[in-house]
Amino acid sequence: MKDMPGLVKLFKQNGYRITPQRQHIFKILQGRSTHPSAEEVYREAVREMNSLSMQTVYRTLAELVDMGELDSLDLGTGMLRYDPNVDVPHHHLVCRSCGKVSDLYIDMGPLNLPEELKQGFQVDSSEVVFRGVCQDCMDGRSSGTGYQRTANLQHYRGRPHQPGVKRKYTNKETKEVS
Image 1: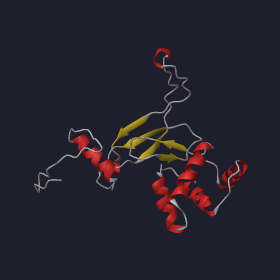
Image 2: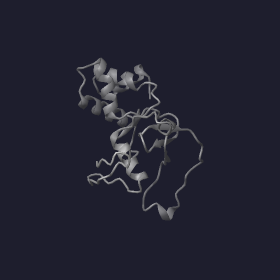
Image 3: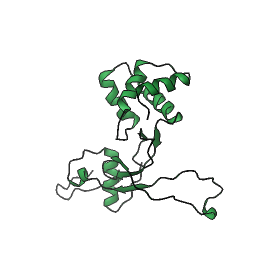
Image 4: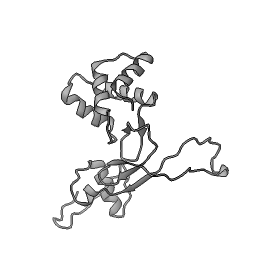
């Protein structure tokens, strides 16, 4: 992702106004190695700029994606994540418990899909997502989101997570039903 002056220039070249709200969002994303959701960007931004709307965050992130300054990632964590690291090819590690996403720099060589499997697609890129449990979750230090924790808990209990399907689970220690 470009630095602040580069983003300002790019937005002006594309006919977008440079507002204090957009500049604040740029600042939040600069040099970030995490992969925030729009909601996380909004929560962080609104602490210093309460005039910022969620719609402005969504629109600015979409514009940054359209201009190639961010990648939007659907990694199965229940929300789109945004990756400002667009300059260096990489893959991702995703924690099944808390949803943490980390960049993984590994040269896997070119991943070529055989013609008979392309189904008429012209493939121009590929990415690999590795899933597991991060060190913070293994050590009990993570405060993962309810969505990921619920999905993870049901997955490890041998039941796949199915949104909208309510199940009752008994806590063996307290005999409470949830």
